[in-house]
Image 1: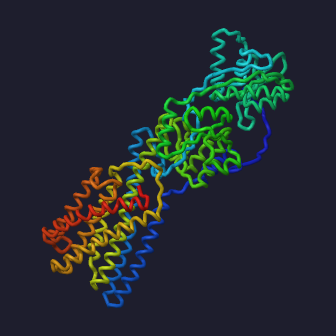
Image 2 (image 1 turned 135 degrees about the horizontal axis):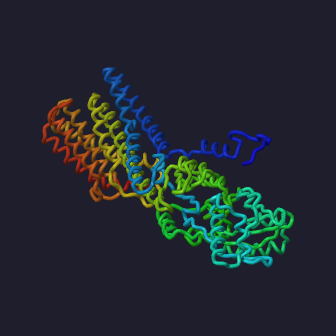
Image 3 (image 1 turned 180 degrees about the vertical axis):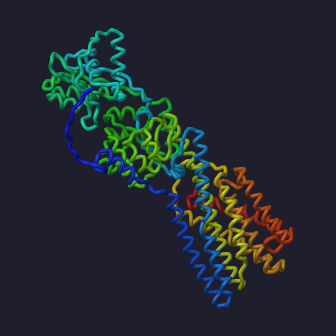
Length: 611
């Protein structure tokens, strides 16, 4: 035990310290939820459209002296019908169900929006060690210089290492040294007494052990060639020879470390050692599969440029290697690999890609990766990640490699397809309903549906459309984005088709059957419920209706909904009654309408690029 006292000077506190800056970046970094922006944008459009119709309704009511109370209630119901009140619940249900399934497949979801964001991801920035490689560094080659022996080179490298650091480089060097010593290759078993040790520091780019030899301090260095050469004060000729040797080792994909030793004023370069971390057997296949799904994979590594290029070429990433400097961050899409990356550089790379409109997935494991994981739309903490990285990420992989990313992408695109069906159906039905009810008032001089039936309509439709959250879907083969303008445009065309059908049936029934006003309100109620069912089943898939069977929950909800509202209408419960024959005829008409809408859907989806 040592005792004593020392004086210190505080130079920075809080957010101005190294760890404080990291914590502040984690706190301030965030990627906006595309789903939230989509919801807000659509709701604004629907409410603005409904406000115009409400003003028309009020103007008509005042001109024709309709009851003010009934008019206000009707106008309020129009506004309520335009707001997708069940959308947050449907979205939460869809993502929660997907998260539960992902958990059974080795992917833990820490933030539900991350599941849906995976559908839009078009670029994955992956770290190398343990994700694309096996995280099993081993000695690959030695290159001795200046007359040193390979045995001496390994011995000095081991003296510049310490197992207590748990640094993969140190552990690999020590393992190689231990094996050589056991093989009795001439490495001296005795070791000098160590007086100090400085582990690897990104600032110095080397590790150093200080020993006592013949009563004098003696230094062993291991690290980046440039940093070691600077400490050695190498001459140009020696520097050129060492750099040539480094390039030869790095070209084979090895991570190259320079080794030097000697007294402080007389350090001499002994040679280079190459450590290899072979790619995972499935890495190239997973990268290719992600590319097929429209996701470009880039790698961020601290390796030298030549080493990074060799690894990237072996797993199919490409050969365009960049550093995280200002010039390359101005055009990050031109880089397949980012080399010589420090942990804090990853946040800058993510931000640079986002500025170009990319949706980014980011894998990481360390504390310093946390800001980048938080900034990315889809932060992915790998299996070996620290607790801080896991807390900052949106999903956590429990298995090594990128296989879990494929699972997340597939699940995210399924959720997107479900939410696209829900949102498209909601916009179509809102446009159809509010225009139909408003036009009905202007054409008939009275309210074509009662406030009670509007409330029942909301319940009847929302409980069924919420089952879309667990429907069977076919995920898209390309990244998915929320394009509100195209979505609303497609919905307007489909709503126009539905509106023509609904108003035609209403006019025909009014002229043909001579129903009482209350019965006509029931017919309108049934018509809007049945056409909602038709829309859901037509719009849930790009193919022909019936070609891809719905999930059990949606099928059951649709059947129960149709039977329930039909039973209420037939038994005159909560509404005026209708003959069973008329209800059956209405169902047949809606079935024919669904087939016609299915034809229109394919044209509309192709025109507005919805798939």
